Structures are given as C-alpha cells and as structure tokens.
Length: 355
Image (cartoon, rainbow, N blue to C red):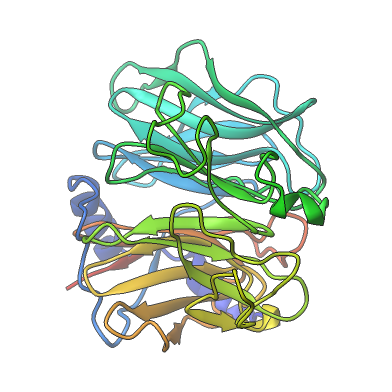
C-alpha cells in the first residue's frame, strides 16, 4: 500500500508528550498481564528512528534492546530514544531473511537467534555494565545446527512462564522436514536456558515441542499460560495457533483451517496480503500481532479468538515486532529489510501510550 508524504512527516515527528510517555514506559518492566488496550487506539508517536532492518525487541529490566538483522548489532535505547550499540554478534552471515533475528533476556544474560555460515543457532551472552553503557560478554552456544536458508528461518525466541526457552524455526525451504520430528526445521523447540532437553518435553530426548510449522515468527503466553504462535502460510492462509505439546500443525499437508485428521487447526486465519504475521504480544485483553505485508497491527480479543480488529493499516508500512508493557505498546517497523518502501529516517520504533 502506497504511503503518502503526509504520513512520512507524521512518522518523523517526536512530540514532547511522546518522550514523556516513553520515559514513563521505560521505567516499567514487562508484566505478565500487560496493559488493557482500549477499544479505540490512541495516537502513536515515533520514539526512535534511523534503524537498519530491525527485527526483535526485548526489555532488559527497564531498558529496551533491539536487534538489527543485517548489521548484527544489538542496540539499547534511553528514555529519549537515543541509541547506544551494546555489541555486534560475531559470526552472523546475513542473507535474504537470515541474519541476527530474535532476542530474549534471562536475568543478566542476552539470548540471540542468528544465522551463521553453517546454519541457524541460539547463543547466550552475559550483559555487562549499566544502562546507557551496556556491553556483551563472550557467547556460549545454546543450540546450533538449525537448518537455514535465504527464507523461512523462523527466529523468534522467548522464555515461557515455565522458565523454559522456546525457539521458532522455519522449514528452510525443505517442506517435508516440518513433519519429521527428528529434524529441527519447521518446529517450535523447548530447551532449558543452558540448552538442555527438559524431561517433560513431548518427544523424549528431543527439543521438539510442536511440529508441522512452515515459518512461525511470533510466540507469546497469556496469564493462564496458554501459548500462542503466529505463522506465515504459503499463498493461501496465514495462521494464529494455540500451541500444544507434541501438536502437529499440518504443514505441508495442511495450510489454514483444513480439518485434517491428526492436525491442529489454527484458531484464526488470514490471507497473506492482509497479514504476514511476525511478532506477537499478549496484553490483559488481547493478542497483538505485527503484520509485514499487511502493514497493520491486528488485535485478537482473548475472550473471542475467532474475531479480530485492525489498526494503523498502511500508516507505518511493514511491522515486524510488537511488545506490551503496563505503560503502552511498542511497534517496530521493518521497511528497510529489502521488501518495504522506506521513508526518510526509517526504520522506527513507534510508541502507542496507554491511558
């Protein structure tokens, strides 16, 4: 969707109110419940700009960290939206959709999913220093050997309410591997933070938690511990799924709501032109989904997973990630990833303050 020059001007503006709201937001850690998003979306404002193909956002205490796919940089932002380079992840081999992708934090460690020359991997690094001057210590491999390709790399990582590390992997162009529980591709994996296999995983001795995925890029949990995942379809349906341990989500035998025996259908599906869902977040009342090709934020109410509403359609271009705190919602644009139509100063972090 073509964006007007007026929208570009609005994205460049940073109001005093936005900075005040951003400052307040950074003083609040990410909570399990998150905010209750009002029915009418408040006006968003640019918090920071000038990013290069950003991919993931995560909070380290009160500090916002962001990954850049192609530069392999990890950035931190202060309350005024000013960036400081925390570090560059070594050995990243960007190309196509690969590079530095998802981030997660546990205590004083940063976990990163990235594409290396020999495949995708998850590493952990100590976070050193104080906010405003953070740096990274040497990496330790948590998991490697995840198949990579120019597309379908998955890449979202997050710690669940059970304290385990969840990792989404794409099929890396090998469709049938998604149905092979011996393969790491086309899966959601579950590990300890040190890379061990939890004893209660559904397949003994395996990190595989669910399978039959094409390219999942969003995972989040509600306050009851229900796990949700967004997934890119082929040409027909993108999906929102409830993830069950050991569940088979159908790809490549099924796409969208197919009613196939032995497959778990999504709770909602959308045409790729209107969706291409990436990062997701769960608030006290809804699942928020950042959409790339669809260029919109979608909200799915937790009390009716069969419905959804759309916000900011076409206003900011491609949306890669979204996170929610008690103070508001952050959206991360992804217009400089080679598929968007970047305006001056992009990419951006957009702040939607909550009442």
